[in-house]
Image 1: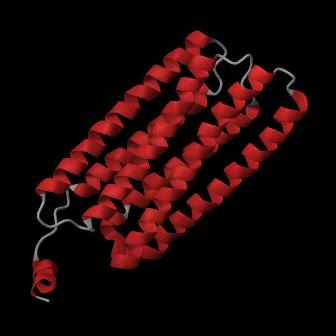
Image 2 (image 1 turned 30 degrees about the vertical axis):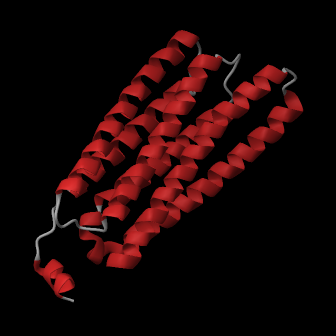
Image 3 (image 1 turned 60 degrees about the vertical axis):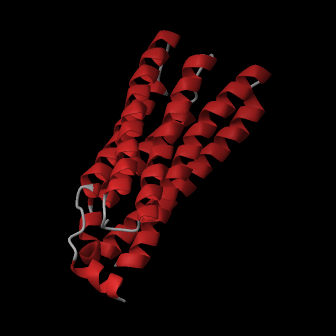
Length: 215
């Protein structure tokens, strides 16, 4: 009881909010780059896009490491340490899947990249934009919990939308692509984009856990 009372009147470190927002911004910038990568018309172009995505992925890793260090060195945090760490980790997962997709486009050098890839990449960017909004309002969680919860619902809806695009892509791929190697390449590339939307939905799930605890 004394510890709970003490924590209520002890200032909580606000530095985690800008760090989490910085990580969300990395996700968004990477999501913009993967749209361009999905439209690459040459391996040289795909390689350049991958380098830029990789740069963002490394920035995200540095921010995530800084958050981890701050968690170890901060007495009072705005949310449970585990929740902050999970939120940072799930956002980093989104960037990792984007990076993985860009890397596959470069390495596999498919004959063509279907329009479904760009559609999925655009959903990834839309999801990243929602993540930026949700994370950006965590510092006023008690005032805007219902709006932040709506952001989480939007992330779930976007994940379902991505599933539909991916499923229709698979149907078309197996019906019309005769080259087995190309099937493997394209399926793997788009699967990483679909996984990025899964990871974005997981960001929403972590935020919903925080809402339940603190709103």
